[in-house]
Amino acid sequence: MIDKVQNLLNNKYVDKAIQAPLKIKLPVFLLIFIAFLFVFYSFIVAPVLNKNAEVASHTKSMESEIPKLVKKQKDMVALKEQVKILEQHNAEERFSIPERHSVPIFLSALNDAISSAGVTIIDLSPAGVQKNKYLDLYALDFKAKLSGDFPQLVKLFVALIDMKDIAVITNITIKKESDSKLVTELNLQTYSRQGVGT
Image (cartoon, rainbow, N blue to C red; front, top):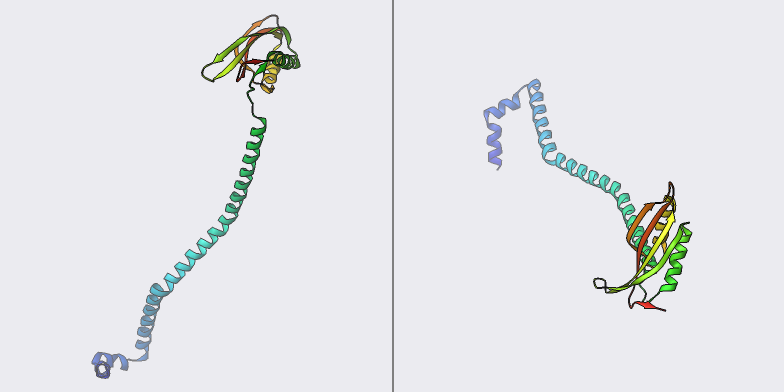
């Protein structure tokens, strides 16, 4: 190894480079130093800086995402609580189909709903009971003939929807009686599991 170094130092070109004046040595040394710095920066420093920049970018991204994720988590918890409340409300307030329906009681409830809308009852009576083969329920039919203006009819439909018992309009006919009054004929149905009771 020492022999190789000595041979290198004895080389005429190396000897010329060593013996060269300072004004030549200095630019050559600067060029070699700059080349070394370029290689050092490109292969060692730059990859580390790029990696640090990626880590910093990822950290910044996560810092901005964490509050959003926390908010989403809170929103999800709140949504689940609302769903539970809604399910409980539906369980408590859902329509229940009675085993048997009392015609007088239903007629009374129907009369109250119609009267609350300000509609005049011309006729209100039961029209029979029939078995609905598709629903496996008994349908109790009622006929109503009513008189009122348009806003009163709107109130009537709202009142029928708000009734505790199911009241389904199966047929409706509206005729003009005067400029403001309308005569409305309704066929209504309610349901029970076993038909008519007392």
